[in-house]
Every structure is written in C-alpha cells, then in structure tokens.
Picture 1: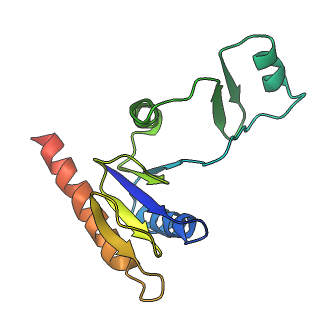
Picture 2 (picture 1 turned 90 degrees about the vertical axis):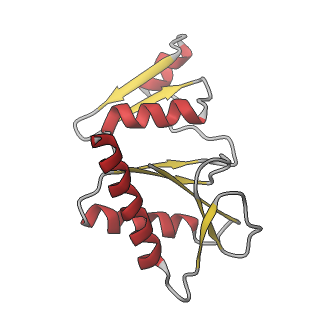
Length: 150
C-alpha cells in the first residue's frame, strides 16, 4: 500500500507525513517513508570510512551500526526499486512518499497546489482533516490485507 504526499515548499508535507506516521504507528501499523529531494543530496561525509570506501571504487557501501543500517549507492534508484527495497527490508503495511510524482499512486495534496492525477485528499491543517485521511489509509491497508489472504 503506497500513498503519495505532494505540495509546494513549506506547505506542510513533512509535518503531515510525521503526523500520519505517528498516528499509524500508534495503531500498530508498520510505516516506511520515502523523501524525494529536489536538490543533490549525500548522507556520506568526506573523510569518513564509508566515503573512503566509495572513493576507492565501491559501487555500493553499507554502513551497519548498533542502532541502524544505511546503504549508499551511486546509482539513482527508480521508484519500483525503492519500493521493492523497502518492502524487502521491513515489510511495511504502508509506504508514505513525500514529493510523489508517480501518476498511478493515490496522493494527498498539501496547501495551495494544483491538483494532480489520483489525488484522493487535500490536507487542510486549519480544518484538521488528518483523522479522515488516517481512516481512509487504515481501511485501504485492511482491504489489501484481506485481499492478500485470499
């Protein structure tokens, strides 16, 4: 189950994603998230061992610590690869995608932004329709679980 969140800069996309994640997790659902950045990013830092591994020619690097694991690859992954990896790593009930451009994914618009195809809600932080959005997502998760059992 995948839902996208989109809107203009500083419209509240991340806040909505955080609130939805907290709400769903408090109801015992496993949530994974994706953040599409509009700028070049790197979680690696020059001089660190992982950076040195990449500089030596490694195509991918895994940094495994006591509290988390990070994978760094120079290849830009497509949407399907990202979703597949998240499903294999954590088998989430739902994946929330901030900055979603994928047409076939149901989406939630945030703020004063032109509506995209497959938009199912427009989040309004002033009238707080978060409970309505959460209910919709939970019903979709449960429906998908029942379908998988059949």
